[in-house]
Length: 130
Image (cartoon, rainbow, N blue to C red):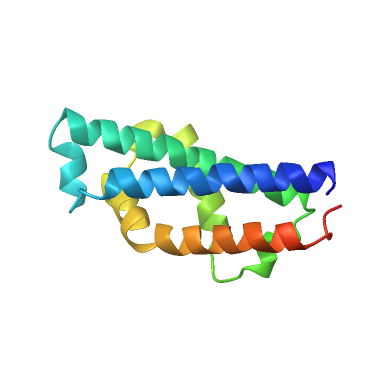
């Protein structure tokens, strides 16, 4: 396995871990108001947002390492949105919208986790990025 392939796999594993951590932290959140109701909710919102930044950054790095060839093999994911939320949260942190974070967690993360695991399997089996 090449160094590049190992770096891609490492990034994918970090992303998988972050998604699973977000989903665990999100388990008791029933609406976006739960993020804003108390200090515990705000801490979850902050920690989830930081993990989303890391996920977006990770996928940007993977895109660079694979010369934009890996993510396009998984068109069921809105990669522009995945990478874009990182930009919004990083550069406009005080404009963070709890409703958007809630929607991403509630409607999109399970699918992203599934695809990330699929990517890990496929990269493990492939020599494409050697």
